[in-house]
Image 1 (cartoon, rainbow, N blue to C red):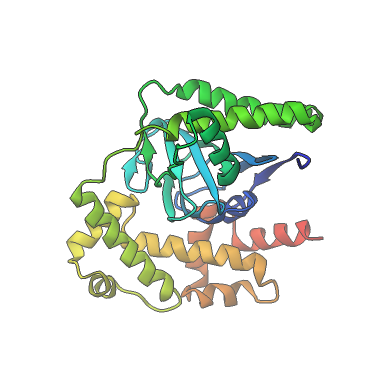
Image 2: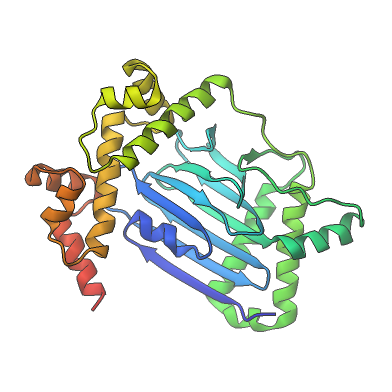
Length: 320
């Protein structure tokens, strides 16, 4: 057994939140305007990882879970408009995350997410012990889950208790027996859900088509982000009409294609302001297609709640 470790990090940008969950390959883009304030908590126990995320802005998240793991998460958001892999997720929802297929989550402002990630090998051993030697561990697809009889409130309480204990008394988890029993409790809760037919039905055909259109457009935008991209270019890349493109983006991302392109580029600039400290702000902005610097500064400030010069100054001060 390895010693437990716990981290708690306040974040001021979306991508910093993405990288704060170790072992996961993730990319976050801030979509709604205002200064980003996030919280990330990360606990490791033997073969279990538990983490918690919260952000005050709408964030588009994409990525892959840790390799050779099974992961479940509880999302909780008050407003409407959030979705996971195309499925609407209002209120509290249980979702599965796969290390084999990339997920996408549109996390509305104020969403709370608590997740548990279990290494596959010890989980399979536990499953055969509990359900018999012939039990085959089924890896979940990245979709929302509904399981009659599964107590999501108790599951949330279990995850919350693990994080509270780590936050307030990590020394207690240095005791092998306590750590092992908590790990088993978390693994057993996961097995109670994925051992049954708990997965939501496939998406309607129209939803799949709109998500595919947005995915193709985003892929084209990212590949040509430093070029002048027009709506006709996106129509050609996706093979749909201007109206269909507009409808798909507004349905999936709640933004127009032009607005999303600007937001995507602004997120790229924000990342490079930290990574490319020798380049001027103007150089970084120009590299991502912003030639009108005063308009760029206004757009940046509206989205992130601070001027680009303030972002760079704060990060330079943090780095010493």
